[in-house]
Length: 314
Image 1 (tube, rainbow, N blue to C red):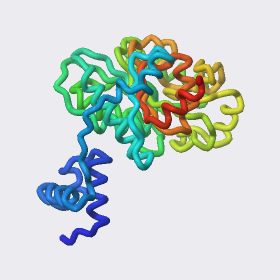
Image 2 (image 1 turned 120 degrees about the vertical axis):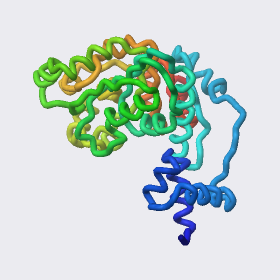
Image 3 (image 1 turned 180 degrees about the vertical axis):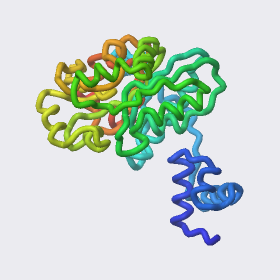
């Protein structure tokens, strides 16, 4: 087949940015896997793809050290920014995936939220032959506008990669009333997942701004723009696992937080290691607030976002 420059670029993006396997790409374009391998080789030869090995540690940079010392984090990984946001996010998630591979152990209970950053992290995670692990969805997600927003899909992929059992929240992220939420929690399948959230060793979460124009909950279809504006006007700064928190990192006592189908906020804060993965200067205030409130214990972000966070405390 004739391979245009645009086709070569698109194939390279599928493999290196979207973490698709050569077999998946071959199926997508109805070509053989060896053909895909040859295309990727051609991409390297033509300079479309450049592979660099950076023998340095983002974990020990000055910016990382300042974040750890200021907020009492276990660890902060600050990744140098690339030419565009998607590539910076991809590299940040790659570091998170490598770190996760190094800390996962047999018999671990692993919680996972939802969102784009977690999607890229889980897709890049190496498979591990672990024993007796559990993957627990932290919040419902049925009705999301895209699969990578859906925690049950991310949980399924993660469970497959760690050879573990998935405990899903087979429900929407938000229900209409707190009474309906209580009724759902009495259902055997959901009750089992709720009980498992009290036993988590580690949790993976995204952090998002509650600025209405930046709200991922609006983009995912969980909130209307009007709802997002009302929540923001009530003092919300960001959200985590569907729960909105203020500028001090305190989960807010507002009606919508009582309608989130997911882990209880107190149970979340009892998890020993809570890893936040988020990039983008528009999220800096939300990340800063989460750090102030000690909502997370570890952070993966990009350098521009980290410097913006640091600027808030001088």
